[in-house]
Amino acid sequence: MQTTHHKPFHLEYAPSIESTDIVKIEAKNKLFIDGKFVEPTSKKYFSTVNPATGSTLAQIADANAKDVDLAVKSARKAYSKVWSKMSGKDRGKYLFRIARLIQEHARELAVLETLDNGKPIKESRDIDIPLVAAHFFYYAGWADKLDYAIPGKDVKPLGVVGQVIPWNFPLLMAAWKIAPALACGNTVVIKPAETTSLSILLLAQIFQEAGLPDGVVNIVTGAGETGAAIVNHNDINKIAFTGSTEVGRIIQKAVAKTDKKLTLELGGKSAHIVYEDAAIDQAVEGAINGIFFNQGHVCCAGSRLLLEESIASEFVDKLKTRMETLRVGNPLDKNTDIGAINSAAEHSKIQKLIQTGISEGGEYFEPTSSQLPEKGFFQKPCFFNNVSSAFTLSRIEVFGPVLAISTFRSVSEAIAKANDTQYGLAAGIWSEKGSKIHKTAAGLKAGVIWANTYNKFDPSSPFGGYNESGFGREGGRHGLFPYLSI
Ligand code: NAD
Ligand code: MG
Picture 1 (spheres, rainbow, N blue to C red):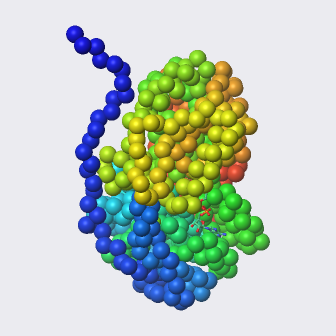
Picture 2 (cartoon, protein in one colour):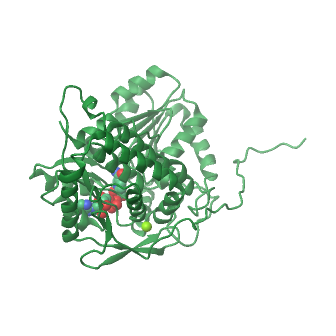
Picture 3 (spheres, rainbow, N blue to C red):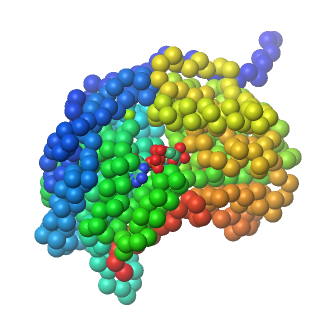
């Protein structure tokens, strides 16, 4: 009888490319102010590219301070004349309608998100867009129950809220921001990231289709200067920001001298702890999902893997075998696991950090199996093994598919190592023992802690960080508080 070798289980699939026929991308994409698409006052536009090919997808309006002011005026008018006067029940009806329309347009939204962002279609289709709809459904349900959110308190909306979001989950971050704000009776001026403006502009069409009153949500596209114009506008009552710690600091300084409320959702360097009694194969999958999901463009990515010493070498071998089977490539291919890095700038930042890791003497591994496409911005998944906490990649957020692995010998050492960071967004624990999971979780300084899973999101569950990962919570009942005057 023939013996088979335990080679990595690697099936070759024929490409299965999602058609892009369903989306119609306008050559020029205007601002969405007072319920209408309008030309920016400067008449200036900039390009957005498809990171999987490097080619230009469309032109996006560049909003300046004047446009932001028009958007704020429109939001203020909608707030005082319509939205703050409407009953919670009626606001909820609009949000339910928007949620259902998102489901109806799901395929279109998923393809557009993948084209503009570079994430695999199976993620935009099965994770991002369903969660976007789920957030609107969830907060629609709160709109007429705000009196029960905080018993004994008479809650009121804040007014006009300014929101600035990143490019890693363009539409999901928009949903996290817009849905609770509207449910609570606020109106919105929001700015997407400059590399991923298209999906939120399609959402604007859904708002029109839903009959959302003019000015309740206004969308201004542009880069950092447009964001700063929102942050510094004096008729905005609250700022919500997700992005880098660096920009978070600038925003906190700017807001400190005003009476604006503020929530910040910033970076992370989250620890993923695997104990020797864990279900190893599941934990390997968990580690893969923790760091390679969405090309590692995840603020709560499990970018530091902490392995109990007794299982470390077995674990690392299994991780290597599994990484050989990950498919990196065309994000529109339904078989793709790892798509394109969102921009040339982000790609070169990741490559520089990998070089830093190599020059610091890290034990580098990347799979040999996959070939990267010639065009576009692609990065193989990789890790550095046996790194100390002084190693740059143990401390700095890479925001790419790069994992730092180290070991520990006891529960207390695992907790100490996990907490040895300026951040505190998330953590993961793998063990078959509930008591060990509870003991570890109680010692961790992280806003979100997963047990025997990772990167699982649900609109009913609050999300947010400690320390330099920011403050305030999004999602769940807690996610209402930043949008209410209590
Ligand atoms: P960034 O903070 O520069 O951008 C985030 C958003 O803020 C964008 O919409 C941007 O246009 C806007 N912005 C930039 N400067 C601004 C300013 N001065 N005032 C107001 N708004 C401003 O983040 P980035 O450059 O896109 O990514 C850099 C790093 O940030 C990443 O490598 C990663 O480490 C981190 N990041 C974290 C998250 C997260 O979810 N926490 C998301 C994206 C990026
Ligand atoms: Mg783009």
